[in-house]
Length: 601
Image (cartoon, rainbow, N blue to C red):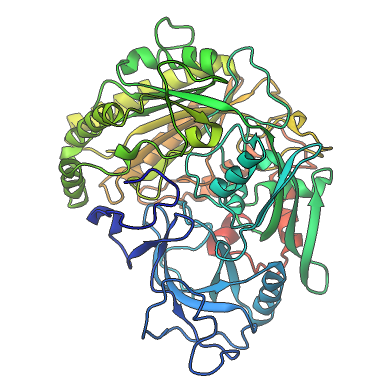
C-alpha cells in the first residue's frame, strides 16, 4: 500500500474492518466515509433528479431515500440519506439525514430552520471518535440532521505576519492545514497521530499529540506543546443574537472565547485561525528491545526508562502489546540535519505494517470477535512480532523528515479498537513514577484475571506525554486557556506542567471489557489525586464507565467530571461558566443531543 495521503484506490480492507452497517469508501481527503449517499428529494428539488444529486459522491444509482424529507428544508442545501458509524463501530446508524452546506451562511440558514422546525443539528467531520457527543447509539434520529463539514467547508489560507497564522474551515483536515503551512515554511509542534482529523473536531475534544521539549529545550515562538485548542487566535461560530442565529467572531483576547476552544460539539464553528511556528525537521527512532519493567521504572530509576528518553529527546510514546515483555517505544526529537543512520521520508504514515495486518493476525482477531477471548496472549505476541519484522522490512526504525510527516502515523486502515483511560496532570518530574504505578497496577490486574481464565483486555497499552495549555505560548493577547481542556493549568498547582496519557485498547465486544475499564478508571481517579497529580478524562475516548457500557456512570458525569474543571480554577472561568456560555450561544439547544443534555444541562 502506498504511504501517501492520497491513497484512495485499490485498498485492501479486511473483513474485521468492514464489519458493521454498510460499506465504506475512501473520500478525496483520505478518510473512510459511508458510501451510498442517497439524495433526498426536498421541496427545492428540480426536475426528475433530487436536489444536489450531481454533487454527492458515492450516490447509489437508482436508489431512493426512504427517510422522509424534512418540511420546508432550506433551498440550495444538499441533503442525503447515509449510514453513520464512529471509529470503533460501537455507534452505528443505518440511516441518517446528512446536510451539505456550501458555506457559513448556509450553516446559519440551516440552524434557523432547525430551530423553527424543532430539529437537532450535529456537526459531522472525520467520525474518528468513540463518544456519543455526535449521536447516541440506539436513539431515534427522526429529527436529527448531521451536518457534513468536509465536502464544502474545508478551505485553508496561510497568513504570514506577526504572528504567522492559518485560517481554516471546520472540515479542513490536519493534513491539509499542515501541508499548506509547510509550503510557507511553517508547522505545528504537537500533532495528533491521525492527519485525517478535522480542525473543528480537534477543537471539540482538545486534541493533542505526544510532544514535549527535551530537558533544557525552549519552546520556539509560535509553537505550543499543549492542545491544538491553545493555538487558536480567533474563531467564528453560529450564535443566538436574541432574535435569530447568526455568525459571531471571537478573538483570543475576549474571555468569552475560552469555553469555545474546547466545546464538545456544543456549538458550530464555521472558521478558525491558528497560530503557527517555524517548520522543523524531526527524527523518530523505534525501540523494541527494552523490557517493560526497565522502560516503566520508577522515578529516578537507572536504565532505558521512559522518563530518561523524555529528558533526552522530548516526545515519547510506548505501545505495549498485551501479554508481551517488550513494548514498542517511539522517540521523537528535533533534528535540523539528517542523522547518518536515519532514513529520510517525504510522506506521512510510514508504518504500513500496522495498517495491513498479516493473515494469521486477522484470523486471531476474527477469533476474538467470535468469542474466544483466551487467544488474547497469542494476539498480543503476534502484534509484537509483526511490529518487529515490519519496522525492519519497511526500514522505519529510524526515520527523519518534516514535522507533519514524522508525527502523522495513524491511518483509516489502522485496527479500530475501543479505548479507555485518560490524562494524569502532574509535574514533569513525576513522569516516571506516574507511569510506573499505572503499569504495575495494570499488569497485576491482567495477570489476576488471566489466572481466572479471563481476558477482558486484548489491545495494547498506549502511553504518551505532552505539555499544558500555557497562555504565554500565544503571540497575541489572550484572555485565558481553553476552559475545559484536559491540559488546562490549575491555578493552585502551576507546577503541574505535563499531561500523561494512559490508555488501554480492546476489541469491541470482548466479555468483561467495560467492567475492567470501570475498575481502571476508578483506580486512576483514586490514585492520581491530591498534592502530586489529578486525573482528567480524554474527551474523545472512553470515560464514565458503568459495569456494561461507557458514558453511563451518573456520578462521574454529574459530579466527578465537572469537579475536574472546578477544583483549582476561578469561579469566573470553570465548568459552570462554560456550560452557561454554551447555553447562551445556543439557548434552544439546536446543537445538542440527549447525552449532551445530561453532560451539559
